[in-house]
Image (cartoon, rainbow, N blue to C red; front, top):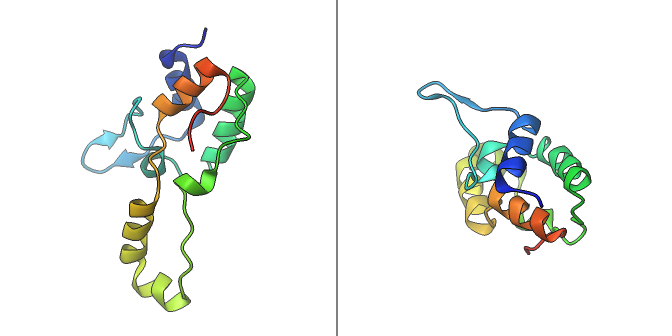
Length: 112
């Protein structure tokens, strides 16, 4: 049976470690919100590798629920990016390692 520790260690190896000037390396924990931790271009590859390694059917996963897209004009994207980011954070569902660990135990994506 898959453990939470195995899933956490897997993602720690798969994802780049963000660094803060104040605190140094930012550790990945079970309840870390992945949208704030990993880049969108990196996470899909990690999710595919997770699916393969732990034999989890992720076909029901709706990535748009976790990374919503907002239609905005060029002006808005250039000059109102903070407002757009705040809106995206408000609309998104949090995506955590704990969700992946529970899904690995079940063998399929349990959320959405």
